[in-house]
Image 1 (tube, one colour):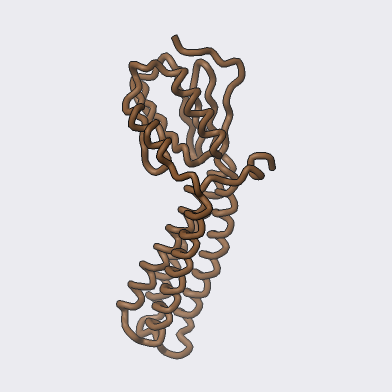
Image 2 (image 1 turned 90 degrees about the vertical axis):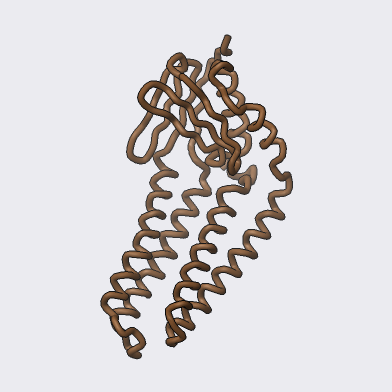
Length: 234
């Protein structure tokens, strides 16, 4: 029989997501503005089609800017509440809730830090454990394991084995990530500059690809490395 808990568990996404969103929003806004102004003004005549290029730059960097705003909104609005009788997930645009008794199946997921998909009639709730601090994540996993009938749970043994295999030296992973991020951003800057001085469109493609890789490593540094204990007490 599922265990009863007196106090509800209420979790919000890590504060580092807000920092990530603000930093990315400022960076993408600055890069996008610079790209549009340079292309539209075409001072040195290096752009054969300045207006289309300015439009393309605005759309490309504007999309990343909107994604940054979404991250900021998610860090402020998203909340997960788990009681002995229900699960409620509040998102940016909508909320989902289900009674524990209505849960039909549960899938424990192993990648990248683990997650869970809770299915109930007409919908589902997806929870990504890397959204939360390490101690919160452990408490959430334990509570969901206790509250949901074991007959509904799938892939638990594989999931718990993957949790035990998570590296215990996050600082080394952070340093490697920072190094890779710096290399990709440097390569992106050099490639875009080469394209700007008319070395050809392939350099632009390489620059965009390296820039996206650098952003991916930035996301990895923030999301997949456990936050310090100071954040949990802030």
